[in-house]
Image (cartoon, rainbow, N blue to C red; front, top):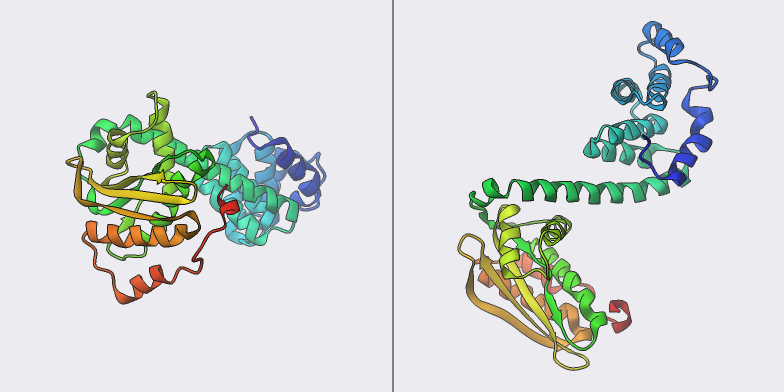
Length: 310
């Protein structure tokens, strides 16, 4: 069964059909192409055409083998990369599919297909993250018993409370900013925010209500993080925010040191986040180098337009 959306499938069939077979007619059979491949095994065009024929016949493993051969002979051929990605995806090898699609984006000639594949890559990344999260939850018993590295840190979405519900987007946005700044230290390894969110989403499917402190610790164990950063964003009044953040030891579920806290206007969100990040480094026991601190303190954007948040 084909797995691409109808728009992309149409582009592949209509936009590339003429060049995909290296000049052969659409009626060329797999048998004929196999015969040609036996006599021209080093021809990129022949291997490519055979791989495409196999793909269209739903013989995905054979398609991948032929297309991989073509790609080795001519690694800059976009059509080969495209169909190799299709075959990889049909076989469930999302990582290989992403690599092949990326190659088409680099070398392929059809801008509409490149645009479609950009979106497809994002979708495959989400699919990969979801699959990884499901696997982690299934293996929770074994993963939870393995202590995480204390230098591996996961930043959880902060909880927002306030009258202006449009500011709820800050829950993930603020966590993204903290993740970026904490990752500037060479002493820490930050768990990717997208990976963390996929895991939280999977856990949430199995329970009712919003995530809580216990869920955060559970998620930290599943990604083998030694510590997690969690906190709250409170709308003090119309334009002022207070952010509280704490470092939690995953193995003990205990808060380390005193929670970090900062208050400022929404328009000064980046300054607010920067202060929190610097305080969190202290809680994490990290001494920044001069260069690392300079990177954090010289964030280009010093204020935020309220409209950009909502």
